[in-house]
Image 1 (cartoon, rainbow, N blue to C red):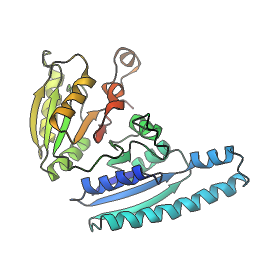
Image 2: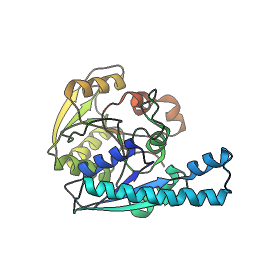
Image 3: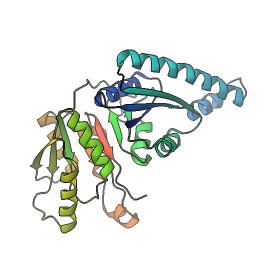
Image 4: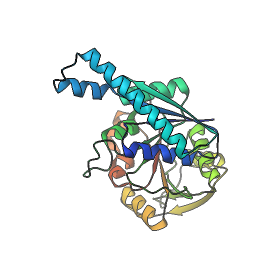
Length: 281
């Protein structure tokens, strides 16, 4: 059974991400944890000279959260009455990142699915602060669903990789299962074909190929100076439905010397975006 965490702030964007998750995992047994973390909401209201005492305000927000979560649960069951799906709602007085990581550890969550924007829905930005926090700090894969993006089965998946980061078997199985359900094609994109693969890279590549057994795989190469531009162009030119990338965090010295492709391109992404968290803890 797949365990899927859906952070929600009761916005349309958040509900669309929940619907997308139901579609992506519609063929298998799945449990959805719908989480509303409301610490910021309480402190923001209290800072605005709310007349209620802090604890009373906290209880008001908590009760409203439970009420709204029940509505969300009823709506999603109407939208997707899938007997393979189970739903659990949770209200938590804490930060989203902390509460999400606690759930990841307690429930052995496979993936977080979240909208790229929340209630503020600032048209000047592509990714809201909450999704950026989760992409950076949550300890499991995160799938970001763009605002107003129409649903497409992930038939074409782009996976750019240089085979430098070690792959996690569980995360590759998640991708293999998702893509296998839709008979997807995974485009393995190598952006610098001039470089000769090291023994480490060759071992990582063989592990990757051995783990992605269900989808068809196509190998593409591009000579490009800017990886982010090359990836965005490939997405546009090839009608990609889902982008998969690896988020690595290097030790201090390496971090000072190298830039993350994800950090460089994150504001330009227009398709659902799955980040695999292969990082140093």
